Image 1: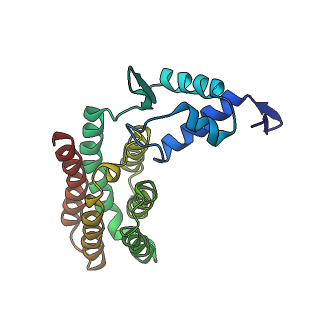
Image 2: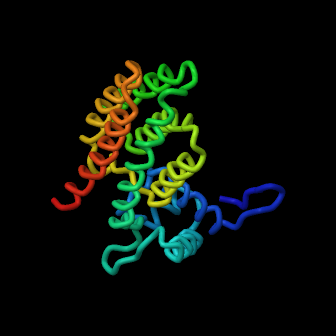
Image 3: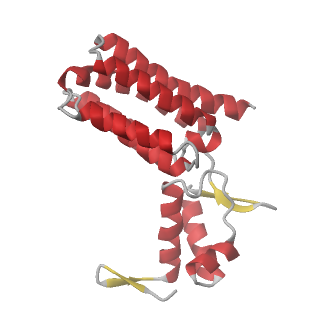
Length: 222
């Protein structure tokens, strides 16, 4: 692969490899524990192994990749304690944000959320964890973005961003959780459509988030 222009400049082959691999780690294509075979990556990129090795070293320095003897390079595993703490915090603040947002949801919001959940349901057959995770975030954002408290909303956004940095799609580890998640979305939508009290909505969103955490922890234990 030749050097490619980027904003009027050029990127070295190692930088191109670095950006390419990092993007696939970020979107879940290369999930935690995925083995990064240098020769295979070099072939996909159309370069020699040397720039790929340099890219892997950069990613290792950032903590995105680990290297083990007799195993080689692989995408770093999730920091389990940080993931657990983030999910617990997000359960609290997102539940509250959804309850605050419920009375002021703009027209068409629930229809949009329902359309996203229908799309999520359609992903269950030919399951793609990265795609499902992206749609799942879109679904939740539709419901919490109307939160009128900017500080609570900021906390929710920070929690989701932290999850993204952890590079974890729980659905990669426990695909069965995806079907349960879609069903729980329907329950939340039902509460919103009938104008349920705020505490009831808050509890449903909180329980939904904690159920995902519980599924992940149960998988790790077994």
